[in-house]
Length: 305
Ligand code: ATP
Image (tube, rainbow, N blue to C red; front, side):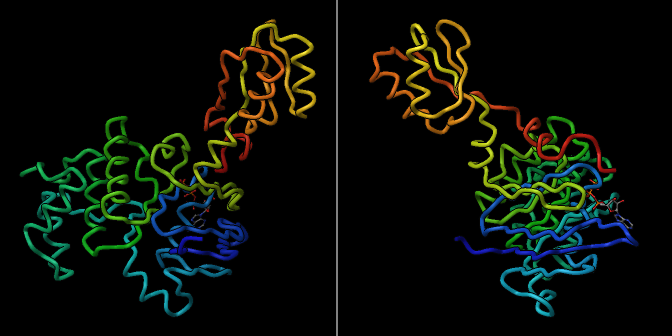
C-alpha cells in the first residue's frame, strides 16, 4: 500500500450535542487527489478544520505524514490549506499579494512569484486589483498563496463552489497541475460528485458526519456500471439458457437485445460463452449510471442542513 499522508482514526467533533463529524477514519495516500464529497452541512469543513489545526477534535486521532499528537504542529508546515475565504488583500494585485506572502516566509524572488502565478494561470493579471477578481480567480490566488510554503499536501474546502462553468474548468485545471506537475497530494471537498470526477483518484463520501464509503476512482466506475447491453441475433430462450448456466442476472429486452444486470464485470466470459454456443454478438456495451445518481443512492438524497 502507498504511503499514507493523512490517516484519521474515529475522528469526532461534537458541537454541544450535535456530532458534526462522527468517528471518521479517512486514508489519503501520497499522490492522491482525494475528493471529499458530502451535502451542505455533512461535516466536510469541520473535518478539514481539524486536519488544519483550526478546530480541536472531541475524540479520535489524526496522523499526518506519519506523525501524531504533539508532533502534528510541526508537520502541519507541509500542509497548504484553503478553508473558507482565502486571506487576500483586495487593494493589492495578484503579484503584490504573492510578494507579501513570500517576503513573510523569506522566500521572495520575482521569478518564484511568477512561477506560482503561472501555475495557477494568473501571471497576466497585471495591475488589476484582486478585489476586482472573479471568484474563480480569487480561489486560484488563494491556492498560489498556499503554495508559497511549498506544501506536500493541499487541503481545499469547496474551491469550486459558486463558480461559473469557466471558473470551474480553470480551478480544476489548476488542481490537476498541482498533482501532475508538482506531485502535491490534494484533499478537496465538494458537494457535487460530478465536478470532482474528472480529477479525483479517490473518494470519501460523508453523510451526516459519517464517512459512509471510501473508494478509488476505478471502484467508483465499476459500481456505477448499471447494466451490460448485448446485441445478439435471435436472443432466443436458447441464449437465455447460456446465460442461466453462467449464473448472471438478465432480461431479454426484445428479439435482438439482452440486458445483464448482475455479473457485468464478467462481460468477456459472457461474450465468449454466447459466441461458443453459436450466437453472433454484434455489440456489448456497459451502461453507466450517472455519478450523481450513485451518490444519491448512498446518501439518500435531500439535505443534511
Ligand atoms: P458546508 O458545505 O455547508 O460548509 P460542510 O459539509 O462543510 O457543509 P460543516 O460546515 O462542517 O459542514 O458543518 C457540519 C455541521 O456542524 C452543521 O450542522 C453545522 O451547522 C455544524 N457546525 C459547524 N460549525 C459549527 C460551530 N462552530 N458551532 C456549532 N455547530 C457548528
